[in-house]
Image (tube, helix red, strand yellow):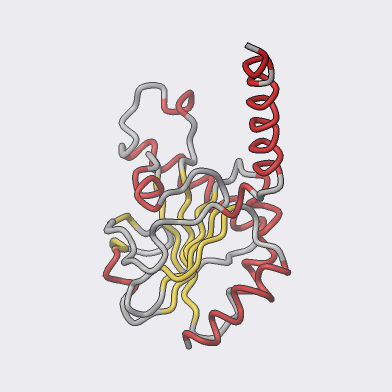
Length: 192
């Protein structure tokens, strides 16, 4: 009977140990199952040019894909870093404007209707005009389906896709100068 008295204490201490270990982990360090795999297939309209952009357009290009939105505070914070990266030779910058319009703004409209697309495009272009154009290619993932396929769970998120269309890098959260210097630039040099 006396040995059962300590069971709740042992269980409590085990739970405290698991919680303490979890608190030491960085939530941005969640590994992506897409690393080392081909980028998910998609096709989206280009906002700043005619035609569609699709997964095949990664072939032959070293591409930085950034999921962002005008309502995202971290996106505004990291934008100067993206502007600096846009000057890198041999790097294609693709901006995926993710769920630009909230459900309340859609008010039952088809997310791909001309009216919804025009509203989201206007907001996107006004923001980029004010903050600076970091992206050679701008895409609008209005319903978030492409982002879901990429495993986006919060904004901003950045991926590096190599010339064969394989994802080589993922960063959740705003890019920082440290991440760029210590992780991204060395990887870019190796892949070029």
